[in-house]
Amino acid sequence: MGIDNFAIRLNKPSGVYYAGETLSGNVQFITTKPYNSDGVFIKYIGRADVNWTEGYKGNTDNRSGPGQEAAVPYEAYEVYIDKLELLYSPPDGKLTANKYSLPFSIKLPPHIPSSFTGSVGKIVYQVRADVHLSGIHTAASVTLPFTVLGVKDLKFEVHLHNPVAMSNNKTFSTMYHDKSLGAVSVWRKSKPIIAHLSINKQGFVSGEDILVSGVINNESDVDIKECELKLIETAQYRVGGGKKSEKITAYKCTQPAIDKESKAIWDNVPITVPCIPPSGLDGCSIITNSYSVLIRIIPCGVHFALELSCDITIGTIPFQEETVSLPIPPPSEAGYAHLTTPEASKDGYDPAPPGLPSGYPAPLSKSLPPLPVPVPSRPLSLPPLPGSKVFKVNRNAQRSSESAQTEGSREKTPIPGALIVPSAYVYLRGVKLRGVNKPKSYQSIHKTSTNKRDEDDDQASYVSEYNNSPRSIRTFC
View 1 (tube, one colour):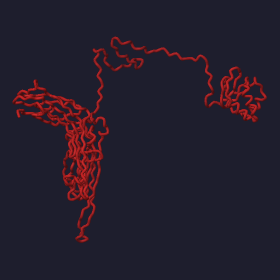
View 2 (view 1 turned 90 degrees about the vertical axis):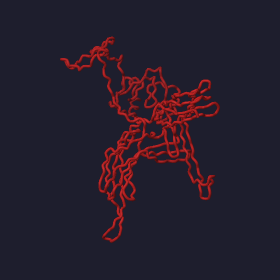
View 3 (view 1 turned 120 degrees about the vertical axis):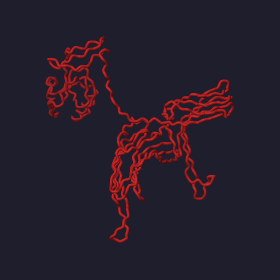
View 4 (view 1 turned 45 degrees about the vertical axis):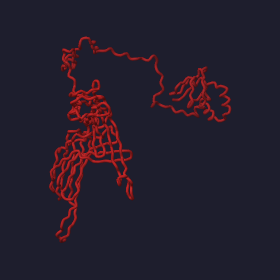
């Protein structure tokens, strides 16, 4: 067609990029004759597609017959990148015969999901270049897929650094001939196969080894044919109300056979993690994935295998040992004195302070004047503290004594432990007003009271303020 060696070359030969990284490369081609061209275009594509069908698929027109179920399709897609750019516009609209190498570059979005391929769904990323001739005709087109790895940092999931243990056992039913009963076959249970295994941690990245250790004790009379170690990826697809899942073997290795009535000891048996997408497929709502380690101990004959499994997490940024490095003090030429070990003086441990650079204020003196102690201007009158001696007063005897005493004598002989309160203050409960002129409004209320106890209650609940009386009210603390 006149356009040869049309290709896209990425700056990374592996074609693997992290989300948020810059994708760059060159579009290369050779033209053997001139063309009237609208230019060279490049398009970046990233999308997820899910498509499966459930139910019985009968005739070609999908009509359900008697006892048949109509096929139900489930389809969905998501678009993450869809960008078209003009890579090269030829002058005067003529693409001359020449050798072309056109650079391109795009920064990938930081939160796009990883590439994935399953039986009914996939997440793909592509870059496509087209040479457009004048009009609607496309002279040449080329597409190159590339792989995206979403960022999953294992440093933020500290619990994945802990090892995990697995244990399981299994017995077999075997048939044997009992000579005492003649040619009669009898079923019996064998001794168990007991497996205690563990893996070194729960979080891994591509290229790392999952180390399996432990003991497999075959106490039965059945030989173990082989042991399989698998890394299983479980993919789940969601479309509306429909769900579908599948298991994909990402890696598989085997271990030697184990004879009956013997044991095998595993010491860091590796399961290498291949280049696979991280767990979760963050950023995609229709496809998710998870990983697990599956160990199958397969016996000889028709017996079922003994299985052990545990879940793990695959990330893109591995664990890192955090180390703290202390800063080294600069030399004295830079204005700081060397740090030396202080020496004790004759009077005791009194090291001299290190010298300071010029321009710094002198240190404070060791002996400082004593701080002044604040002295109150007048002594404080405080109520008795809790736990002091309490005087109990018989109120009936007090009433009789008060009727015999004069008003002045009450003021001159205060009761021990009593608090003197000015008459301008009012107490609502527990206070008895004595020696105070009552207003007319209160005297009218007092006349209606015929009981001495009612009179005392009325006085205790009365609220008023007397500013013109020099007398005091005595209360008990």
